[in-house]
Length: 253
Image (cartoon, rainbow, N blue to C red; front, side, top):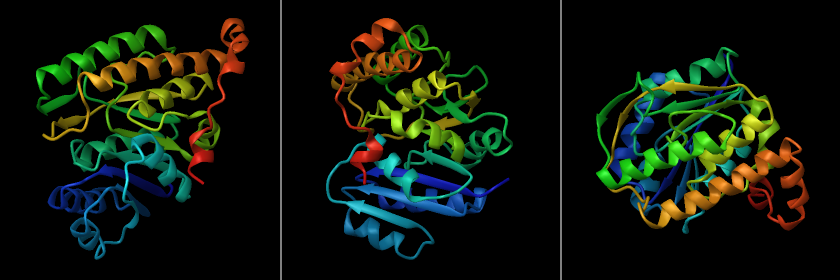
C-alpha cells in the first residue's frame, strides 16, 4: 500500500473519545499523516492532542463537516486519503476495510456502509435518525447514478488521483458533503465501491432529524443537478448559469 493520510473532522469533541480513537487509528493503520480538523474544540482537547503525532487545524467556530474534510484533504499529500467521524463510530479495523480497496487500486472511492446487508450495527441510532437515514438513502438511490445502501456514513477513502478529479466539483460545507462526493465521483466516471462496516452509534450527534432532513433533501437535489450537468444533460446545463456558488477548495484557501 502507498502512503495514507487520515482526516478526522470534529465539532466540540469529547476529549476521551477523540484521544482513544487517535490511538486506535495509529495502532491499526499506521498512517503517514493523521490530521484533526477541530471546530470549536476546547483547550482541554487541544492540550490532550499536543502529545500525539497528529496535525491539528483548530478554529473557534463551526466550518461544517464538508469544509473541514476538504481543508484536511487539501493539506495532506498521500496516495490514499481517508476520513472518519472522530467519535469512533466506525472502529479503526473497519476503517481499514474501507481503505483497503482504494489502496489496492480496486476502486477510486470506497464508501463505508452501515446499511449494507453484511454490515454489523453494534448499537443503533434513535428511531427518528434511523427513519431519516433510511428515507434519505431510498431517495438518493433513485436520484443519483450511484446506487448504494448508505451515502452518509462517516467513513470513506479516495485515491489521490480521484480527489484531484473531484475536488473542484464539491460545494456542500456540511453533512451533505458525503452524498455530493459520491454523486460527483459517479458523474466523473470514478469507480465507487461500498464496503460493509461494523458501526456503533454514539450519543450526542449534532444531526437534527427535522432541520437537517430538509437541508439534506435540498442538498441532494443540488448534487443531482451538478452531477447531471457534468454529464452534459441538456436541461441541467441550460440552468447552470444560475449556479454561482464557489467550490469548497476555493473557499478553504
